[in-house]
Amino acid sequence: MENALVRYRHIRDLREDADLSQKQMAKILNCSQVAYSYYEIGKRDIPTQALIKIADHFNCSVDYLLGRTDNPEILR
Image 1 (spheres, rainbow, N blue to C red):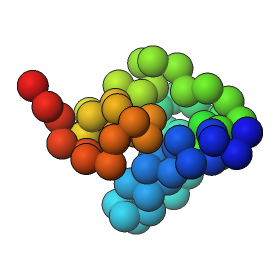
Image 2: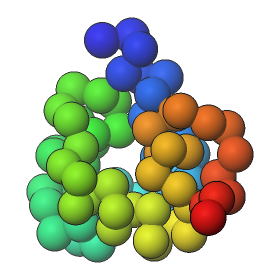
Image 3: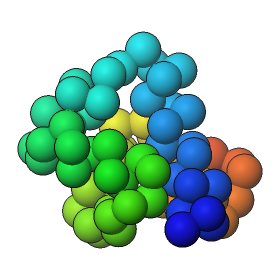
Protein backbone atom coordinates (compact mmCIF):
# COMPACT_ATOMS: atom_id res chain seq x y z
CA MET A 1 0.00 0.00 0.00
CA GLU A 2 2.83 2.45 0.63
CA ASN A 3 3.61 2.68 -3.10
CA ALA A 4 -0.03 3.61 -3.75
CA LEU A 5 0.33 6.63 -1.48
CA VAL A 6 3.23 7.84 -3.57
CA ARG A 7 1.61 6.84 -6.85
CA TYR A 8 -1.45 9.06 -6.39
CA ARG A 9 0.15 12.04 -4.64
CA HIS A 10 -0.04 14.11 -7.84
CA ILE A 11 -3.82 13.80 -7.87
CA ARG A 12 -4.03 15.18 -4.34
CA ASP A 13 -1.46 17.90 -5.10
CA LEU A 14 -3.35 19.06 -8.22
CA ARG A 15 -6.63 19.15 -6.31
CA GLU A 16 -5.12 21.13 -3.45
CA ASP A 17 -3.32 23.53 -5.80
CA ALA A 18 -6.68 24.23 -7.46
CA ASP A 19 -8.29 24.83 -4.04
CA LEU A 20 -10.80 22.05 -4.63
CA SER A 21 -12.22 19.87 -1.89
CA GLN A 22 -12.51 16.12 -2.19
CA LYS A 23 -16.27 16.63 -2.36
CA GLN A 24 -15.90 18.96 -5.35
CA MET A 25 -13.63 16.48 -7.15
CA ALA A 26 -16.07 13.68 -6.40
CA LYS A 27 -18.82 15.73 -8.03
CA ILE A 28 -16.65 16.27 -11.13
CA LEU A 29 -16.06 12.50 -11.32
CA ASN A 30 -19.64 11.61 -10.43
CA CYS A 31 -18.64 9.47 -7.45
CA SER A 32 -18.92 9.74 -3.68
CA GLN A 33 -16.46 11.74 -1.60
CA VAL A 34 -15.44 8.51 0.16
CA ALA A 35 -14.69 6.79 -3.17
CA TYR A 36 -12.64 9.78 -4.28
CA SER A 37 -10.70 9.85 -1.00
CA TYR A 38 -9.90 6.16 -1.50
CA TYR A 39 -8.51 7.02 -4.95
CA GLU A 40 -6.21 9.65 -3.45
CA ILE A 41 -4.82 7.39 -0.74
CA GLY A 42 -4.48 4.41 -3.05
CA LYS A 43 -7.01 2.31 -1.20
CA ARG A 44 -9.00 1.87 -4.42
CA ASP A 45 -7.75 1.76 -8.00
CA ILE A 46 -8.93 4.68 -10.08
CA PRO A 47 -11.14 3.63 -13.02
CA THR A 48 -9.75 4.52 -16.44
CA GLN A 49 -12.60 6.93 -17.21
CA ALA A 50 -12.00 8.77 -13.92
CA LEU A 51 -8.29 9.07 -14.71
CA ILE A 52 -9.12 10.54 -18.10
CA LYS A 53 -11.56 13.03 -16.53
CA ILE A 54 -8.97 14.11 -13.97
CA ALA A 55 -6.26 14.46 -16.64
CA ASP A 56 -8.62 16.49 -18.84
CA HIS A 57 -9.72 18.66 -15.91
CA PHE A 58 -6.13 19.51 -14.95
CA ASN A 59 -4.75 19.38 -18.51
CA CYS A 60 -2.05 16.89 -17.61
CA SER A 61 -1.02 13.40 -18.63
CA VAL A 62 -2.38 10.22 -17.11
CA ASP A 63 1.23 9.12 -16.62
CA TYR A 64 1.69 12.15 -14.36
CA LEU A 65 -1.40 11.25 -12.35
CA LEU A 66 -0.13 7.71 -11.91
CA GLY A 67 3.30 8.89 -10.80
CA ARG A 68 5.09 7.42 -13.80
CA THR A 69 6.62 10.84 -14.47
CA ASP A 70 7.05 14.11 -12.62
CA ASN A 71 6.37 16.04 -15.82
CA PRO A 72 2.66 16.96 -16.04
CA GLU A 73 2.89 17.96 -19.71
CA ILE A 74 1.06 15.90 -22.27
CA LEU A 75 3.60 14.56 -24.74
CA ARG A 76 2.30 13.99 -28.22
